[in-house]
Length: 485
Image 1 (cartoon, rainbow, N blue to C red):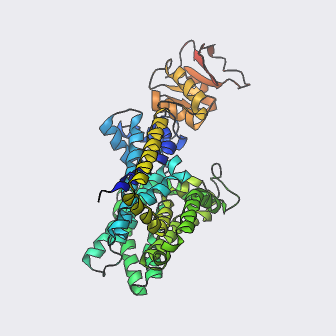
Image 2: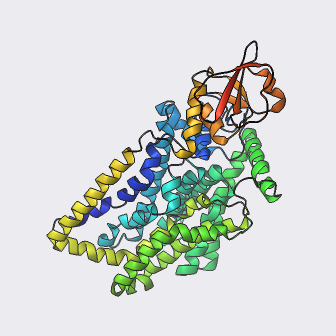
Image 3: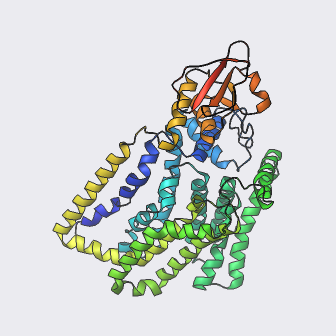
C-alpha cells in the first residue's frame, strides 16, 4: 500500500521556517553569537590561536571567558568557506542538523523492533522545535548548541549499549561517550557533565544489572573523561588556557564576583522558565493523550514507558542543577531540550500511529492533509525568505552607524570610544576589522573618536571636527593632525 502519510515527515519544517528561519537569513545576530563568530573568524585568519583566542586588538585581545572548542570548530568553517556573513549561519545549521540526526537516531533505536513506530521520528522533532529556546537560540550561534550536540552524542552512545553485557565492545562505546563529554566541557564547561547520570538513571528505572554493574559502567565513563583531560592538561598551553578560564569564570562565580549578567535572586527562576518553554509541547501532548487515551495503556507501562522516564530524568539532570548557580539565563536550558520531546513523543506515538493508518486507508483525508501541510510549508518558507538581509529593531541603529563609520575609518584601525556596547564591538570588528579602545586616558592618542549623541561631556580638545555622517546614535570625530591608528 502506498504510504499516504509521508507528508507528516515534513511537519517539523513548518515551525522551523516560521520560527527559526527568519533569524538564520537576517543580518542581525545575538550579541554572544556575534562575538563567537568574530573569535572564530580571527582564529581562522591567524589572529589569536586555539588556546588563546582574540576578540579585538583592545577588547579581549586574549579571550578566556569560555573554553575554546566551539571557536576552533567554527574557525574550520571560515577556513573552508571564507570570510562571509553566511559562514556562522552554516555552522549553526550544521549544529542544528547534527542534533536533529541524533534525536532521530535515538528515536529509531528505541523503536528498532517496531517498524511502524520507528517511522514516526517527526513527532519528537515537531515537539522539540516548538520550544522557544530551540527556535530562538540555535540560530543565535551560542555555545550551548554545540555543547548540547556532544552531550546528545554521549547519551546516544550509551543508549546503544545499555542493554548489553559489559564487555570490550560495551566499554569502547562508553569510552567514546566519555570523550564526547570532554568535547562538551571544552564547549561550555562543567554544565556539560550531566550525562554522567545516565547509568544511574538507567539502573534505577530498569534494574537490568546490579548496583555494582552500574558503578562500573559509570567508572569507565569517568575514567575515559579523566584520562582524556589528563593527557590534554599535560600540554602547557592547554593547561594555562583552561586554568585562566577556570579562574575567570568558575572561581569568580563562586566568589560572587560575576553578577553583571543573568544574576537572579530567585534560584528557581530556571525551573519556572523550563516549564514555560515546555508548555506548548506539554499542552499538545496532554490533548493527544486525552483524545487517544485508549491507545496509551501499554505504552505507559511497558518498556517504552520506562524509556520515556529515563529520557525525562536525563532532561531534569541537565536542567534542574542549573538552579544551584545564581547566574541563570533561560538559553542555558538548550542542551536539556531534546530529552523532554523524546519522552513525550514515546507517550503519544501509538495515537499518532493510529492516525497515520487512517490516512493510508482514506485517500480523501490524506489529500486534504497533504494540501494543508504543503501550503503551510510553502508559506513558512516564503515567510523566512521575506526576512532575508533584514535587521532587527535592536540592531538597526548600531548596524547603520557601524556601516557609516566603517566607510570612513580604514580597516585595521583602533579608534577611541566613549560609547561601548557588545554589538558595537562585535559589528565593528566582524564587518570592518576595527577595534575600539574605551580606556579614558588613551582617548587622546587616536585619530578617531566615537561619542554617543546623548553624551553630555565635551569632546577632547584635540579633535578638530565632527564628521558629517548620517548616523543615528553615534558621532565620529577626527583628529586634524597626528594621532595613531
